[in-house]
Length: 221
Image (tube, rainbow, N blue to C red; front, side, top):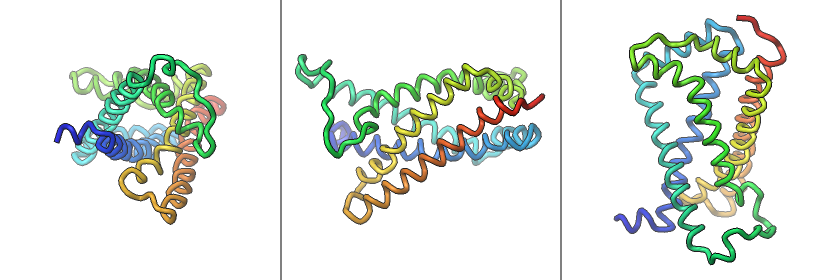
C-alpha cells in the first residue's frame, strides 16, 4: 500500500484529487468574498454564517486539509524528481518543448508563489478573525480589514501577482487533474481544457474585482 501511495501513479492521483479540493475551495472563497462588493452588512453576515454554520465549519477544514496534502505531496515529489536528475541537469535552463505549455513546466514555481502570498493573506485575515475567535479574543471587523488592506496599492499589486499565479496554476492543473483520474481520451480532454480556461478566467476576473473595487472606488468605512 505504501509503495503504491508513493509510486508515480499514486503521486499523480493524490496530487490530482487534492487539487480538486483547491478548485472547490477557490470557488467557494470567491463567492463569499464577492459579497464585500455589495456592502459591509452583507459581507459581515456571510462571515458570521461561515463561523456558525455546522456544515461550513466541517467543510472548510476538510477543503483546507486537501489543500495542505496537495502542497506537501507536490513539494515532496518535486524534490524527489530534482534529486533524481544528474547533477549537471539540475540547474540547466529547460528547453522549449512543442505542445508543452509554459504553465505545465512551471507548476511548482507557480505553487510557491501561491503559497507565499497565502501565508501572508492568512496573517492579515485568518489570524485576526477566526484564530482570535478560537482563542477567545475579540475578532477584528472583517469589512474593515478588507478596506484597509485593499486601499494600499502595494498590497493590491502583490494580490494581483498572486491571482495571476493561481490563474496559470489552475489553467493547467484543472484538466490535468481529471486527466490523471482517467478522463484522458480525445473526446474528454478538449472539453476539460475548455472548462479549465473558463474556470480559470472566472476565478481570475472574480478575484481581481475585489482589489480593483476597493483601490479605485475609494469605499469609505
